Image (cartoon, rainbow, N blue to C red):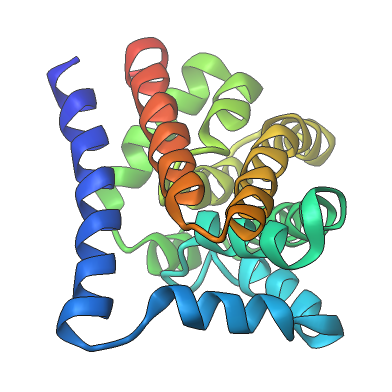
Length: 209
């Protein structure tokens, strides 16, 4: 439980410090940038959302932030659909690459052999339920997709679990983005980012570790 609290605090700290760094140190007005992107997103913005989420398995992209921006730019319905397509596509890509090319590529993607072993133990114990729960967890989500590809889990089971776990998350983040756009404040998005990641970590540590 102590580790869960520490992880929640770390998520909050990263969000707050990132905002401070961008705005106070680098002089970047995050609110102005976000509003400008949202207002001019268009078809290219939609493609950007899907692409960024699809390649999240390779790059350290804050997927939750991309989902929030998707909701802000395209509303709850379309923002959720775009985020869902990109996120599940990225999860499936990680699964397929690991299944096709094995542990060598998986180790290069994840970069942490101990983390792969730990996630694998969780997957063995809990099966598809572990995939569902980890869809809301930064970093763990990508690792779980790769580890699932190395396992005996069927493709259909993985995709079903990913769909069940991802669907509510993209709606929550898209709603947070839409709320931030309508209120003209980043506060709803920041609160939602911290709340979802924090609750997911606590639940995961309490039930699956």
